Image (cartoon, rainbow, N blue to C red):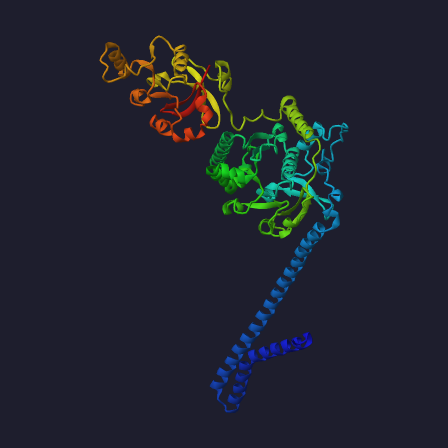
Length: 591
């Protein structure tokens, strides 16, 4: 192999030869020009001179082009070489830290205190002395909401960088807009999520930030945070029905915000004069959510693709993201945090480094963050007195809402549920503006899939039929309706035999005549829904499902309502489905 000096000499020789080769045609034309002058051939001399000038121009142009190209290539190479060692040195520093004896011993690892990462008051505000048992005073939170230390309130000190011993700031909006947190069991995902959400809540008032918690790990992660005034809704895998309602409510809110942006003619909802609160949806164990409710993944996909402009952000936590988070969703997730992982491949895929698989098992909360600026090491803080922070936020919110009137009333719940034994009083409390009358009797509550509302029957639209097997509560439902109707409406119980086409009795004839009369209204109670001839004969049908899918579908019950019913619903007396020209709902008759 040649030495560096000989290689440099050879390189210069080749460069000189290339330079001479560029000027050689020009030199030949100059010789031809001199020769033509000696022969007094003026035309040939002029042509040779023009060719020599053209050759000289081409040669000089090539030299200038090569000089510029070499300059740019040298600059790019220098910048690349400058970045590469920096990135490599960063990874080397993380690797060295992970393999030191101090980190390998759990007794030598100290997690930062959450209170040291959260400013409790603005620099210009007077300091408030804290009680010994209270980590944060509610008055400091009020000051922080009104006079934030950082104008970008979503920039919060998520953790401590062990390499620099300085707080590591994270901004979900700017670095996201969505985030993915990965880590095995016991690696500290729950503590990280709790600290992150609490930190954002301490920096933003409830009218500017709302949380939706979807905990598919039993509900323990966010149980303490449910009391935050920022919490709009919280569900767990203990009730899949509640999770479905929450996801439908999220989709409904997404559509509402799309309409707001379209009507205002803006590209971002934050450009509105009075934008709604930003919603952060936090999902713990995304894999379990996907496995239990695969049909609802499109809701989260829409949020991932449109959430930036609609002020809706996702934080997804999972043990094994490889193959679970779709490519379309990953394309919108720019912020990834990896705690301890078992697979080096997953670590490289998420944070562009295999080091997350090298995090020791006895170091919970130690993680690697990547937001396209290279991997960074962080140590999540330990949160003491979490319930006291939540209580302080609640007191601050009550003070602003009740005393200063700066916060609006508490936002309606993400979804609502009706009791199994409602009364007239409890149903009317759902909506104080509901006013039943003789032509609009109140029978209970109805469920639209997200919220429950008072259910009024419209007697003016036509006849009403109540169908169902014995013991389900159809006779009680008929009694509830009869008690509120006037004498001009007739109620008939056990009308199956009277509706039999072979029945020629006078009573049967009068009933069929009345049902076909447009000026009369009748409420009938039958065993077989087919006898009611909905919607030709009766415009409203209150049917009690049997639990047999084929039978219920033939009765006219929509499939999407049957999917929400659980086996226990079929055992609840008074639980039925209301079918009318206005829609279909699950209803519960008052007791």
